[in-house]
Length: 310
Image 1 (cartoon, rainbow, N blue to C red):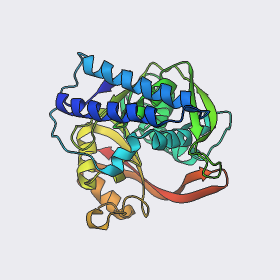
Image 2: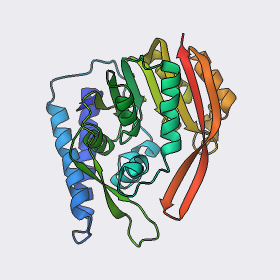
Image 3: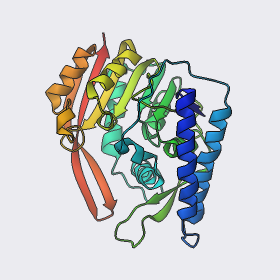
């Protein structure tokens, strides 16, 4: 299930932009391209989801401020970038059995189980993208309610299909050496999990739902005010609850020097402690591998922080 955490005005504006983008994306596809039907179906599913969100009577009652997102965030609503991220997250579950993303996701799971001890009832994953962490946590915590939040509807549609559905989802691997923008069709069997949900939100303007544990990886770097993002995390995590945070210093968090706030391990620790957390663990060096093709990849170091809400 996909819910909207946007205000009525934001949802209307977002819907207009997304329907226009998705419809144009379908028109721009080459109908002779071998993966044409896969992308067309995916975009059409997203358009149908927008119509369902607009008609849904259930509203998430949060007070919101209308704040636009940056182009850096908007790019993750586009199908090429979303599919690249989806293949990165789920490649180990495809026929290809790639494990480039496993260092990140296995570390997140290990930290969650180590410090929460399987007690969390409500788990939130802001900036979940196509939902890999939602999948992992819903499997580890079968009695918990796991919510994945993101601004990219295409990512949420794909994540909902893989995590909550029981049919095959199709993923395309980008390969810059193939002569195509996207090549290599793979499948992931849906996991059919009933304790996971997804929501479309603007993490700048919308509060994060209350939770016992939050897993936030490679998300804060996309937001304009890092300390404000940490404060919103603190507002959402209940007293005694856990945050597991990961992001990339030297590539993303300190990219914009004028606004950089989380630029090393010490600044991450200070930000979370000022936000109301007691530090439980922190370290760096876990590899995050960006891959353009089978023979071209770049490795960055992931920085982790675990804290308990005071």
